[in-house]
Length: 312
Length: 312
Image 1 (cartoon, rainbow over the protein chains, first blue to last red):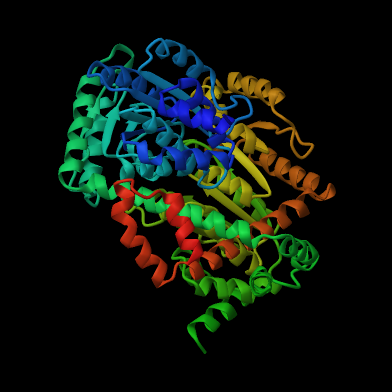
Image 2: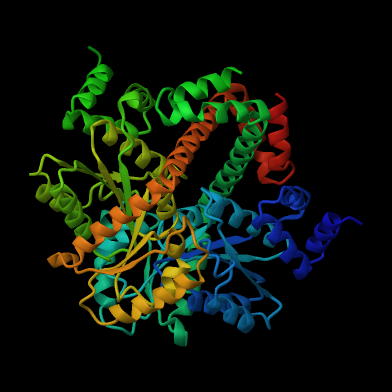
């Protein structure tokens, strides 16, 4: 049996070790990962995808751990994908995640994996989605994306998720910053974590005001919860609200729409890759290199070069 | 004369109003923007591009304003591009930027523009670069990209810049967060702003330690400066260090390499768009819509659909 067959069989029979190998292939953008995804496609159930995002230091990791345990209580199998921007230090798993991984990994119903993004445009969104498909094929019912930072990565993860939870802390600056960072647009649920600190209520009121200005989406007004993830306060409420949001999406057909949009996105990405692979043959690469000097001295423009390449 | 001709002529003769119109076309991803870029390509000098990035609330806007005035002292013309993630509230220019715009706009040698990113993958990088080309065509010597947040957007702007300045504040959490956010990899220069607050020296020491672990790039060790942008402290030093970095890049041919990489990136993007535009004709779009149900019930996989589409 080939290595690839072993991985595919392993995934279907629930081997965590083979899941790890498959994820590595996805992370390395290895073409074999697409063969795996193709082979498990029919047996994959969709799984429910939750994105947890917010500024660094908001306590997302602790919150996600607590939430995962809560979902476990009702017998769900959980996959956690912690997305880190590329960092040569972390190699895809920073210290905190390693500690947490040990803490949660005693439970065979929770699988946790840190992923680096390799800094490529759209790389995060795509790799994270591919990994979530692998996890869904393994029978995981709930898949949680956790991202560090504020920016494009969050938009990507929001797109990959059914419910997006935005975590803020009273100290993370005024709510204007959250607005500037585009978090208002992606949140289905707001969590003010470390809510035992000063300013939590003030932040809640500010967020409520800003939500009134927001264009409504999916017929849903994002609730604002207060939590203290460290001692478990508010986790049950968060769990309830996520289930409520999931029910809302399902009953209105919005969940199906989200899922089909993701499938179409995947198809468009595969098409784009296919076209570019075929286009950039030896002849065209050589031509481009030959024109580099003229390009740098602005004798020939990028648009003109593209015309030449297309007509080749 | 057509509207387009008017804009092109206006850019060449330094009309700020026409620059504004051209930027709007770029932001809206209007195909005419590429025609404009094509027409100004030969007259455009490269300009020196500085990226300023870091977490929300680090005081980037104030720092950039001070820096712009410093560069003005030696007769440079300055363009500032403040990149915001899409926000329906801001419409591309949040309150703070409006205030600042008024403050700086009394100087005809400084042009400042806020841009929204529209949340599209790679949209930020591309639009910001196109706008910087417009500014360079207008004769601007220094172009400063300023971005809000931490994430993919920052990586994009780092790619578009010759010198990348990462701004942190003592309160922005420990340096581990900066590391997690991938800022260590993109920084050419570190600025600890609001350095009159507690923890500035501690942060500097931590950053120095982490820089020792970093794989060196461009034969350059990022200096770490302390500033208090509000009262101008450290701005002169920052100005000197940026000039020093620019000299370093020029003398070693690294600047030319960066510029040619950006041109090649631009060509590859244009090719990708061209290919996709031709590919997604009516027939293929209709086929895709017809297969949507089978896709959702997982009777046919994305890979199989792509194969069918390609063979059409």
